[in-house]
Amino acid sequence: MSDQLSKTRAGGRHRAKKSFGQNFLVDSRIIERIVNELAPRADETIVEIGAGQGALTSHVARRAGKLFAVEFDRDLVPVLRDKFAAQENLTVVEADALEVEFCRLIEPAETARVVANLPYNISTAILQRLIAQRACLPEMFLMLQREVAERVVAAPGASGRGFLSVLVEAYCEADILFDVAPEAFRPVPKVWSTVVRLSARPQINFENEDLMWQTVSAGFAQRRKTIFNNLRAASPDLRTRIEEAGGAEQILFQSDIALQRRAETLTLDEWTRLVAALS
Image (cartoon, rainbow, N blue to C red; front, top):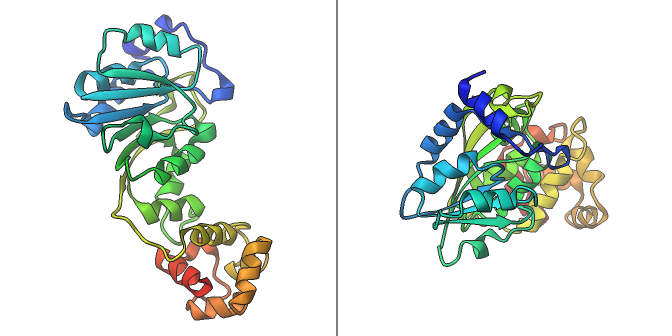
């Protein structure tokens, strides 16, 4: 264990809460690497999600023009506010990241970049919420469980390909930056983590965005089944729409997708064609 890890552990006064999925990043080398990748500028706004004990916060605050540090743990919020009381460009926000309207939070700034060490237990839900607000969050640097990160970047045909993979591909350019060993955290998790960068793509206009994600979700409902069988077993609303379009076999034929294909093999373009056949 490095000296930095020992000092951080000895000085910590907060016991991580399992219910919050807390694993605090304490390795100074990893913190420095994340900050260097983020490269905060004096003319921009940064949002940190899951500020924790402020290890990353202090480094970002020194370089960013403005920093919003979002923390849900009510025991940590006063600690952060006391620690950074003299940091005029930093605002500690006590809030659940799953409920924050980030575009309103950062006003009057038009955009902000995000850095986050996401709790493992809600990382997928937060990621989907961030993507939904990508208009004001054009770039994100996220620490994820490595398994989740692999799903984020999974290409068509990869075993980890799923709803999240298609969602990210549709709206973002995703890059894996580096892996982080469990020993970089306290408490030490059982799994590795990975830092990924998501950069929002130019606005993509699907013919029917809600229908797009309803269809993708149905396609992945049972991974062992074919796309044909999953569409036939879709929710009542979607199934009605499929039947009105001529049935699952017809829309797949119209989209040039073989009946025996599984959802993880479909490209984004094929999903788009499939939804067009339903529209």
